[in-house]
Image 1 (spheres, rainbow, N blue to C red):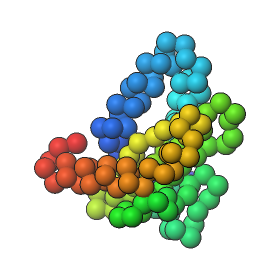
Image 2: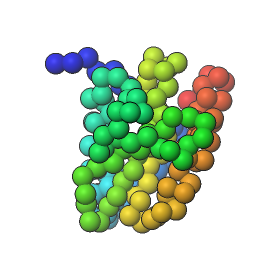
Image 3: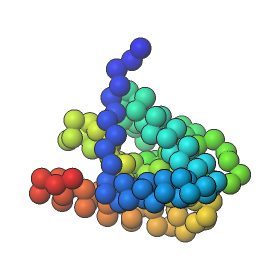
Length: 139
């Protein structure tokens, strides 16, 4: 048994996305249900990490987001699913007791390449917002 390093904290943007996703899943949306299952698996994967990854430690599931300009962002994926391609974007905040902040997620299967074109800039903006809110004592 290893010590779990990661505490998964969530941004407001992520929480709002998850609420909408779960509403759709409860309403019988099969894609939303599959997305929620992959998302739960990805969060479990994060919680089982024992330390933050290094750029040279990429795996098939956890890859460095090269499009980010200011922060070291990571993309978490799941095994192939022909209907859903959930990508969870995370940032490891080492000042916050080495916690992981879940920034946002998207279904790349629906967004296509535009997801990767915008993920770095969007992720950097969410980290800036997280830091600003943290400095103000809000979360």
